[in-house]
Amino acid sequence: SRPSLGHSPVEQHRHVRPGQIGAGGELVPADGQETQLEQARAVFDFVHDNIRYTGSSDKSDWKSGAYLGLTTQQGDCFTYYAASRALLTALDIDNLEVERAGGETHHFWNLVNCGDGWYHFDACPRSSKLPEFFSFMFTDQQAEEFTAEAGRCYYDFDSSLLPRRAEKPVTGN
Image 1 (cartoon, rainbow, N blue to C red):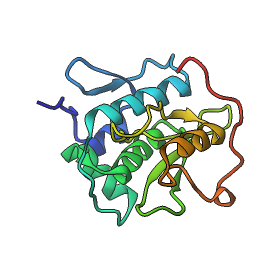
Image 2: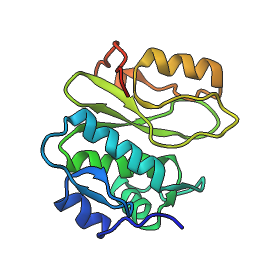
Image 3: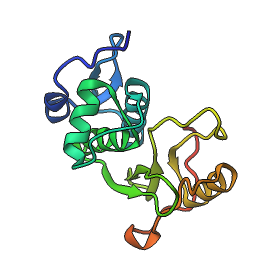
């Protein structure tokens, strides 16, 4: 059985600032002591662990994608991106959409700035056939290295559409 999200996801991200995950799987308010990086990690863990990958979703707009992902707890990479965007935005953490450029399939993830520059953030789980990679707050170089190993244009994107990204890897995540 999947953990409950607690309150309505729309109400959740409007009124509750997620700081951690409660014993029942619900987002609970932050105590105000968490850094933006810690809050972003809580969002990453929550979205990654509480949405089941199905390979399809409505990609008409991110708000619908977030709502469906948080209420049905299923979707595809767009759903993970959209749910992350909704929760990060509720926490006043700057984030942008990134879409794969090239490849045979679409892929979406976030670009996130917790105050130390823009980093890639992909809460969507990957196939066990792909190399292991922790996709929280990673650099362009780390994206390129993973893509070189995984193939399929995995994290290829049009860098001209995005702000300059941080080059120093985040440690301790």
